[in-house]
Figure 1 (cartoon, rainbow, N blue to C red):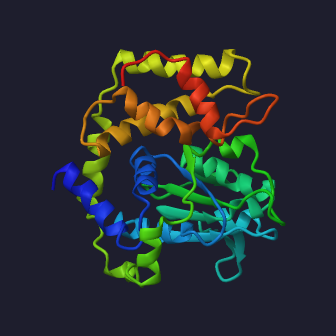
Figure 2 (cartoon, rainbow, N blue to C red):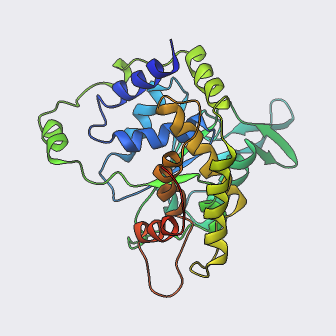
Length: 304
């Protein structure tokens, strides 16, 4: 099966349940293909968990969900060594993080200490317990959901945690047409009935992504974006090198989903708002993510 046929299958199957959210599905899929992670920021009840469960099945991945709460402990996530009285030695019991597709649900309802249990896993694809490193399954993909900070019982995500997420987006309310279909039960489909990718199809996606070409002109645009965020004085902090790599790699995956083996400027611009939304904060007067991106783009000269 060719790459485009695989992409079309993923979108078709996922949209049998997640209606009217093709761009958000493409963004999540881009992050997965690029071996990066996603943060969905939205109110409860708009389908964040449904998207995660559906996409994990369609991709053919082992799925695990952690419900973050104020009393969740790091050991609940990564695991713990316990003394096995029968064997007379310590045994490592793996936590929920040992999976291919991890849903970190309502991640900002847990304390920073608990949130930090994911830092090593998301960056190095391993966890360390008592000086021993345990590799995680491959692929390893984290999709986290975050409630609005105004809600009672939420904690701020530290910048170190936010920067581990390549991109962020909101699902938002469904459009009237999609909502009517939902009300009519047209998306009342069993996740188990959806077609899953075979391992070789998953492998092909990753291999084709690795072949996507990025020219010097694209790197020039990307570095101009970085320079503006760091030198304009508009932001508290500019984009980090990790953010730069996220923008580059997500753009490559987006190009692949568009049926190309090379990146064009519009790929960068399409994903840029989702790279900057959780990273850039304007000094002084509060600016929306759109206003921030508009300011960045206004200082670029490019042919899209």
